[in-house]
Image (cartoon, rainbow, N blue to C red; front, side, top):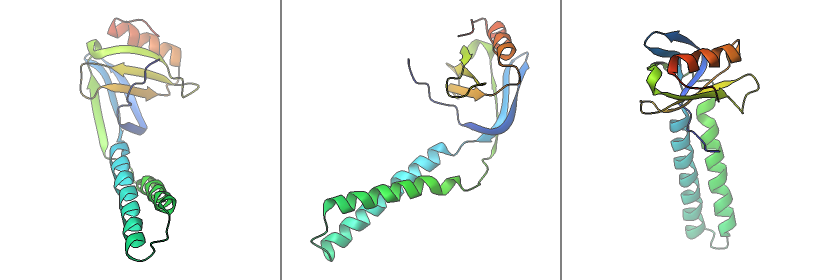
Length: 147
C-alpha cells in the first residue's frame, strides 16, 4: 500500500459532519518543527564533535563523531514534546475533497479520512465512538465507498 502524510492535527479535538463538509478541530501538531529542530540539533552536535576532534583530539574516531550526531538528533527530537500544547486549529474539508475513508491500521478502533485536492491534504486520523457508522456517514456524504 501507499503511505499518506498525516494532516498535522492532534489532541483531543472533535469533528462534526456539516452540510459544507467535515469540520475538524484540534491542536496543531509540532511534527515539522520537531523534525527541523532534531535535524539542526544533530548536525550541530556532529559539527561540534568534528571541530573538537580536529582541534584537540586527532585520535578521536569518526564513529564517535557519528554517535554524537545521533545523540544530538535524538535529544533534539525529544525536546519539543515536553508538554507544549499546539495552537488551536480548525479545518472544514468539503465533501468532494474526501477521496477515501477507511479503518486506521495503526489504531484498533480508529478511522482515517484521506483528503485530496485541498489544503491541507493527507490523512486525518480519528478514534470515533462508533467507527462503522462514522465511516459510512462520511462515505455517504462524500459519494465514495468505505475502504
